[in-house]
Amino acid sequence: MPANTKYELKLGAATREAFGKTLAELGRENPNIVVGDADLTKSTMTTFFAKEFPDRLFECGIAEANMVAIGAGLAMAGKIPFVSSFSAFVMTKGFEQLRCLVAYPNVNLKVVGTHSGISIGEDGPSQMSMEDLALACALPNFTVLCPADEVSTKWAVRWAAAHHGPVFIRTGRPQAPAIYEAGAQFEIGKAVELVAGTDVTLVATGLLTAEAIKASDLLAAEGVSARVLDIHTIKPLDEEALARAARETGALVVAEEHLVDSGLGARVAQALARTVPAPVEFVGLTKFAESGSPDQLLDVYGLRAPNLVEAGRKALARKK
Image 1 (cartoon, rainbow, N blue to C red):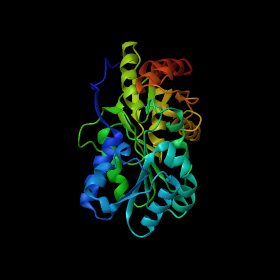
Image 2 (cartoon, one colour):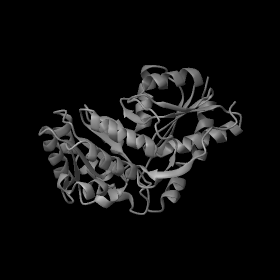
Image 3 (spheres, rainbow, N blue to C red):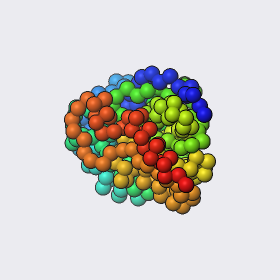
Image 4 (cartoon, rainbow, N blue to C red):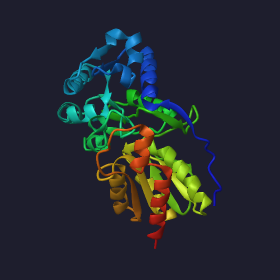
């Protein structure tokens, strides 16, 4: 049984900031990189790109559907466009264009949603995105990424730029705990096992990955060996790692800052139904959140390590 993990989690940069800075780096490296934004450059952090390449930044105003359409056109013209807005805006207001102009013709557009989940905080429920991963995964041809920290976000943005095809990347507003060291290696569709474990597996993505690491420590103190998987790629999903976890630990918990009815948990359950069925508990959202600070909201809506621990206990109790 592990006493605790090797991680000493400290706050790093927000994933939206990592996106913005990496985008500027890519702009220096490749003149075909262009950017569309919807009157939110300072929030989405595309401002880093705009300051260096103002002639390659297309300010579309508060018109996300039009921004997606412009981005699709730029991609068809041979550019490598990134379009960005709050996840709640780009995925809902732009969904028809994402479906008809990007997914169906398999256009080389990169879509980055920022301020995802409820950790956007005081801006309130109208700007919180709790269904963006479900919408993105519903689009054929899309790769869907949800990095946990600064390092994995930088990798995701660079991978998206090099990949030919539509990509959605989910990023957040608050500073994210630093999980990975610079130079860490990732592979599309391959989960990262952050903590070894034999009794239960904590499957997490995005901001909840750090909470899963903390929960593993808390469970270790109870004599429970909890494996932690970081699912940075929501689609394609690492079904092999999930099946192995089901075989080797016999129970799983899925944790996400997203609606449990349609997000990572639903995809994990679907995958296990095809491979190795096992008890699964779900930590996520079931309703719209109120306005409050990010910390208050994560506490109130049960997206903290103790909530994962309780779910872990329930999953363990269901093991045969």
